[in-house]
Image (tube, rainbow, N blue to C red; front, side):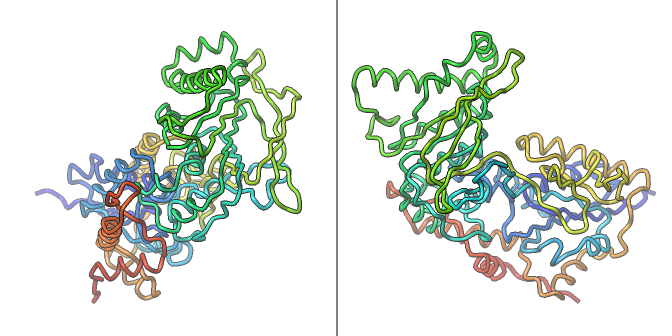
Amino acid sequence: MSSSPQSLRLAVIGSGPAGVYAAETLLRSEPVKSGRLEVQADIFDRLPAPFGLIRYGVAPDHPRIKGIITALHRILGRGDIRFLGHVEFGTDLTIEDLREHYDAVVFATGALKDADLDIPGIELDGSYGAADFVAWYDGNPDYPRTWPLEAEQVAVIGNGNVALDVARVLSKSADELLRTEIPANVHEGLAAARTTDVHVFGRRGPAQAKFSPLETRELAHPKGVQVVMDPRDLEQISEAEWEAIKADKRTDQVVQSFVNWLEEQQRREAAGEEPTDHHGGPVTRRLHMHFWHRPVEVLGEDGHVTGMRFERTRLDEEGRLEGTGEFVDYEMQAVYRAVGYFGSELAGVPYDSSRGVISNAAGRVTEADGTVLPGLYANGWIKRGPVGLIGATKSDAIETVGSLLEDLESGQLPTAPERDNDAIVRLLDSRGVEYTTWEGWMALDAHEKALGAAAVDADGQPRARIKVVDREEMVRISREGAPQPTHA
């Protein structure tokens, strides 16, 4: 006669890839598949809709993102993971509540804030964090509906994909973005923008840029945009570095895009031809790529950004970055820092303020002295810092869930006193929390698609989706579109 399976109650805080993959990895683990372990998994999110930074932290014109959302949608739509949105950890639910109702808690809250750029003038009006701008154009309900876009010359500081996203959205025509799910307020704001020149600055050279080949090539695709290169940035690359570039396929593809743009730019200049965009049309905006530029100071007058000062850099004989002593000033009216993200502290959870992560060892949450807090885990960017892509998040989940299963096997996992699966919902109801569910997301999803179908893009084609921005409206549509459970 077989014994009953062991029961495990799991809570995950955060419904982005790190949270979903943590729950999915546990549900696909050998103890669950063999029938020895039965898991009840709940995923909570502070926003009414799922998917975290995949919905609210990546440029809407990234086609690959749709594939990631499709994968997450498929996992959450199976029915073996319960989604509860519009629930704020630390306010609507505390760590004590989770301890009462769950044997294990995985924190997967990501990194939402901009990392600091500690230079003079960074606090001036017109100086922004890229993460805040991304949240605005992605329709995050917790951000203002408008964004100041009066600047003609704009600086984007950073050489990662977020910097490229910001630069591309600022330089792309608003009408081209109607093919995406951007809401009306974002289209209106971008359509009224006065931007003529976007400058992207990186401290290192073209070979050290953390761009993907595809995203690099995409910079030149928007109508009316000319990519402008500085010949010095490529001339500065040594013969040894060129050999290293050719030996790495990804780097070679990225740098070759820069070379091609520069050659076309120089050919037109030599022939006395007017520049054109990638399609041969007139240029309305320019995207300037600058390398070997270390930010020194944001310049300003009367409290507002008027420019940026940089020191040109180079690699020394050992490949380390050093300043050249040459300083260059550029006229700018706005600056966006895209130098990385930073994780936020969670109430009652040990936090490493120097790194912006939850203190942990192999995913196990620890005190500052290394003492493990049984039953608490971390996954994704809040575990290891804001580096790496989706593949790294999956690897994180394997390690974190592996630690959880080891603790379960060794008897180190605490047992929550409350075993009723609906008890947490009754608690939220008693506190007046208007939580949303997966069925509610399906209603909101259908509503956003219907908004898109009723509108057209610049080519007169129906739009796939238009995001709802207002949080209260999101909650109303979600709750009205899904039957709310009744509790005895």
